[in-house]
Length: 516
Image 1 (cartoon, rainbow, N blue to C red):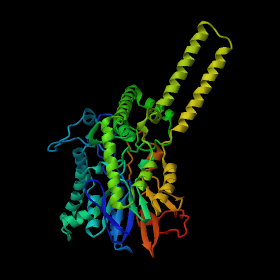
Image 2 (image 1 turned 135 degrees about the vertical axis):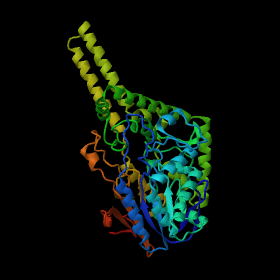
Image 3 (image 1 turned 180 degrees about the vertical axis):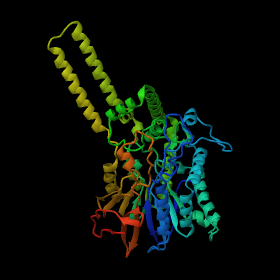
Image 4 (image 1 turned 90 degrees about the horizontal axis):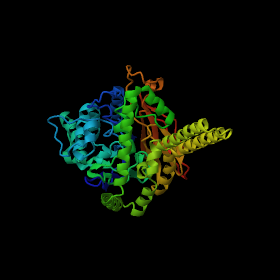
């Protein structure tokens, strides 16, 4: 295999020849529990301490294992840092060059470069054990690749990348262990804004670009046309900041399989004041989505699109993957749901609310007419027709709204394997470990390392919430005798344990998937 080390700027890699074994995991969400702004209603997110401890143990375990290749390369398949999930308030002596907006004063600093740097500093301080373990891994001569996810797209900023490298290097210096030079250490850390690829072995990306609720318009230039100093916010980012985090008892996860009835009953449990507050926050979120949609039709959006195309062309040239192949990859991605009025209405259930309002209004008017003038047997028939139409439209709109992208990601993986021949197509994003045949490859979702500690004082917790445990899954890929093989494992107290073996790719020389 080859090593691709990213240059600062566009994430365009250079190429050298060092054989590597890959250690892949995803969705750690460091910083998800940082909440420095309290608006009275929100509950404090409590990240499980055990998940960080287990991650440190995993890093120590593989650091002590000599791989068949010349070195290890850790590939974090997105969402290592939860930039959008945390709420950070600037304090003295914090300094920000990008002035706070009204929304950022309410919900915490945003995603401008200096805002993201402040968030990263808080994360490094909060999760020092994880950063120390990761720094020792790299200091031992191994490499690290970070694929950008939708929660850490702020790695787009070069200053944030530099701060991340500096933070890791500072732990190496503080350990008083033999220290590589700063240049050598930094060269072992790369950032992949789009995907990580080893020809014939593995294609790895986060997977959010196949989820219309989380996709960004321009993966290589994810800037906001409202203010190019900031990263563009997506549907989930807006709802998380405006609605989920400020609302006590509302969880970030679990929205894939609930409908309008759940949110109406949830609002009712908040009481009148809570319901009004939730409604106001919801309205502000929807207004921002429509503002974002209009901005993507502006001249500023055209400039961002041009910059994105330039960066894609530079990546195609540097990697020799070909511009046509990268454009075909772009064509596989989902359109962000905020790009159309219908998508926004469907995403926030306004289509079903509108149908319900029209149906109830029609029934109300029909009832008044029946009382005043009387219409005999016609009124029940018309009322029945309205109810049937209401039910039919509700079912239709429900089927149009698919929140869980898991099946779509498996489908895309088969197409990816044709564009980028590899034994394994690996993603994260859904937090659910999975494995399936995907054309000539094996699709693997490496799950997550994100886990909230249960709040015993929060009556909104259900038994399922209290029992939730992060998958703690990871994938180990070696190449033996020019043939890729992988171990799909979960981390337990005794070390890595075998997951159910993924389905083998149907190819003339299929990869081996073996137990740990």
